[in-house]
Image (cartoon, rainbow over all chains, first blue to last red; front, side, top):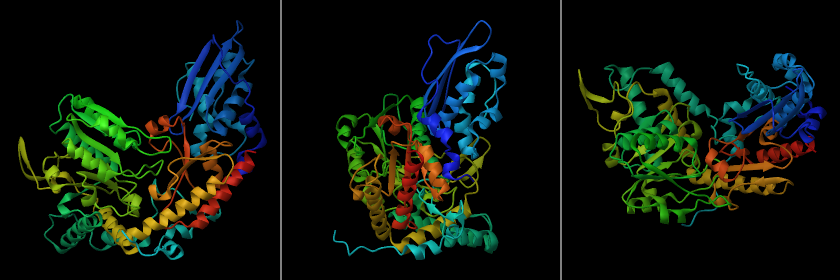
Length: 129
Length: 415
């Protein structure tokens, strides 16, 4: 079990306090919104895709715990500029690698909420939690 | 009423009765502050259920042999204990269910859906309720076309009883209210609400899940028609709940479960119900659970519910005081600890309730975070979630100190 400081490492807190790509995009090529009804966390994701099938712009919006918000912020950084096939291939292991912290089963749901939103936005099947 | 000088609980001695406190969590001594979700169990309760399974396990009511007689005696003995604990006139007014939720669903189905409600009749609830006292009434609305209305909450967490002036009319058939809020801790004036319900000819249904475990509850003084609570929140096992109903309303209530035990006679195509309360207990009941609940009632009675209540007022007062002193902590509910149960919901500017709970978990402190199955209440206060600490007989001010230290740690991490 991680200590509080291990779980809330500098980079997590940094993304939580200074989220990257926070806001909305209108119009957006893809838009998804999911929530975790258990804790009230909510994440919206907006993607603009250019003619070369690259994610040219990305924003997220939402409320929630440090883990869910930092994970969303990190996810936006990871997908900006990437080709759609690469974005679609992102999975839970990638997200957990960004976070780089051990998580309990309950907190995994927080961590993977943004990935779930991404998959919903792209019309991909299955929940990644 | 004059009360003798405060009767304090001997918490260190009580703690020794709860085997779970012998273990460590996250390599720290356990601080359990989630009794509003479920309580821990004393050895006396664990032993009582084990004793049933090891010494006289048999089905109740039908067996013509000694084990069956013993099991029936203990099961019915538990019913007597519960009846006495809440001041019921007779043990036949006590129905064993699996939970508060099942108890409330039984009323919604047996008195609401299968009862005499007509389209346009009204059910009056409150915004403060747990989901288990909302959703069953949604079922009744959807099946019978009745109208649901709600009393509101003040900013400080008080139930707006003045709303009943407008809400209660001749159309009102059911008034339902939580005795204590599981989020705010607010203790609602149930006796007054039941009286007003009766004035318009309605029955009063009380969700007592957060009150019966924590304070003296007397159904005669409340004069409610139905009262629901759970065993597992009052030191008893999971899977056993209680529905109290006045004898006259129970006669007019239809059973939720059809099956064995609940019938007097069955023919192909027809059946006659058994007497109250057995007509509500279809199927083999949770015998071990009921016996464990009986042992829990014995345990609480031995401590004395006045002492339990005084103890929780003291801890709540200490918690409100300690947490109130921390910067960036927002407390919810009434200021007066005597007006609330041992439940303290709070938020912190620095951190989301989930993060608070995670950091406290690392410190061996169990609290709850989320909407506490009371989303309408959370929406009323425009909150996605709160953190909640709740207290019981095995908590003392040392636990409050650990909680306050844990919250200081949260502030340090999120600085």
